[in-house]
Length: 320
Image (cartoon, rainbow, N blue to C red; front, side, top):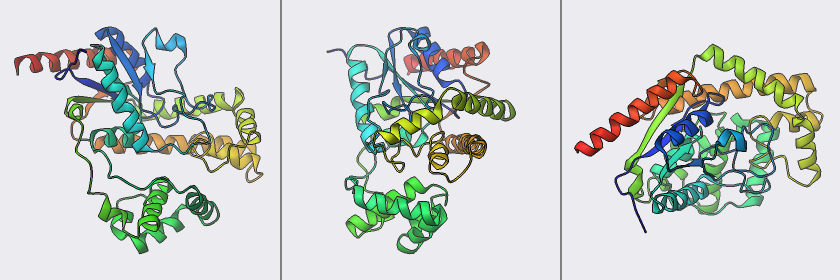
């Protein structure tokens, strides 16, 4: 078995619609013998397609891709589960003598891969459903206030709108009787490869990015997004799953429940995704080791920036 203990692992990140897929594939082809691991929390699901931006076979250009469309939509897949699966894939790829490239904008996935979470209790589906229903009826700010009472330290680190992590912190408290903030520091040791991950973040012009997000959202609705969601709900996939709670799907569920009209669903989805893109950029700005690339991942100049940075990094590694 061949290993590459000093070979870099590359991570291509950035906001939604910034061209991460194109840039990741371009880097893989540039390096040769490279394989891509999905680092997007929506592309993991099998049954949701239209609003996920999963790469097509043509877009993959023959580059092997992993961890795409392998979880059923009824499963509330966790970040810890993804980190475990991604770690396994990295080891498999490197055992073949190939380079692993992480591609996706879910910053929490990448951070957890590099700095594992503590050994938390498994999801209690009944408790999660109860907390999710409370969020739906009273709002995200309400459950954040509950967390502020039982675990103010954890609440202080979370945006009131970040109901996914707020709910998880409440689950841990109610299941263990201990604050999430008290347990969280008890993390496992980072994997050996964590120090070898080189993070590159795409940073396109904000006004152009927002225009593309708006146009892409309209295309999703025109291409049958409502029918896709309706079929999933008819098949028994609950609205409160992680899959149907994702950006691009949540407002469609509200439309199908009669809580908003179609025009409102489209416009609210655009706003959700623009806000999400802004939060992604903010998240990656907190990563101290990120190398920023100005433009979209599909632009030849951005690809040249990346290839040059990778070449310089390899040269430094060889000197060291």
